[in-house]
Length: 347
Ligand code: N2P
Image (cartoon, rainbow, N blue to C red; front, side, top):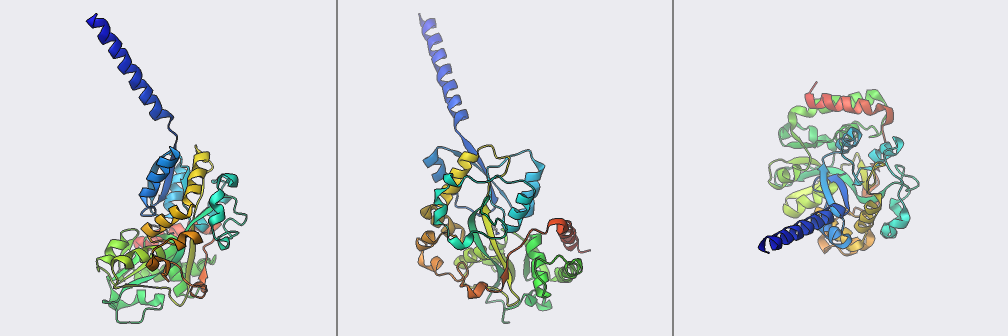
């Protein structure tokens, strides 16, 4: 009798265990691949709770890293966050899926000025996530000069006090702007001149940094850094000695959007996720946490006063008059790769 009881118990435990395992398997999931420091992970938890969809979250550092990872295959992703020029390239190369807008009703919350931009003229593939500018952040206690030009990043006296962005497109653009050229030039001589400027600047540069720049500047370890505006907002919040400037030669105006790769395995839940991120309360929570600028006016209204009124996050039309949006370099992308490798190796 005792033996029968324990057999029954064993079978029962085995059945429950296999049911539980089955539950785990059937829970849907999405693979979300985003820039580092670019989401409030609490928002991911909220999505998982509300939709019963697990989010597998991983991160990259630059558009180029994202592109390479996608091309390598292996892993597949359901939502990624490339910038304008990279979206244009990915569409051209058939790497993205067209969105079913019926599944993204919260698109209506996005300001109309973010639609119809050159990188996705019919808004078929991308949903705006964050936007911003590129500028110079500097520590007012370490700099006496007026900071209003990219030229200051080539001043001998600031040797080892300068941080440049560890991002090929952004850094080559700074040199092009300094020279008075378009950041979208297709002229190889101009690109070569930009390369020479960056190689000339190298001995003055303490490091080429990505997300680490926030700790460097907040900790007062360098006088200047080229940064994305949202990171500037986050840094100024932590160290009021810092100030952000858009140089007079102009700068890059950028847009990072949510898109779905063509080989995504769970497009339906990816669209739910994108829709969730466009809810004003969620977009506000996220933008406040990361410091970046949301394209959703109702979300801006929900932000704390200091953030809502930040000229760094929400510049006036006039302040961004002298800006350019990156375009896909198409065939000359190989020149960008070559130039960047040569700049980093100092050749
Ligand atoms: C956040 C990266 C922001 C990307 N760490 C700017 N395009």
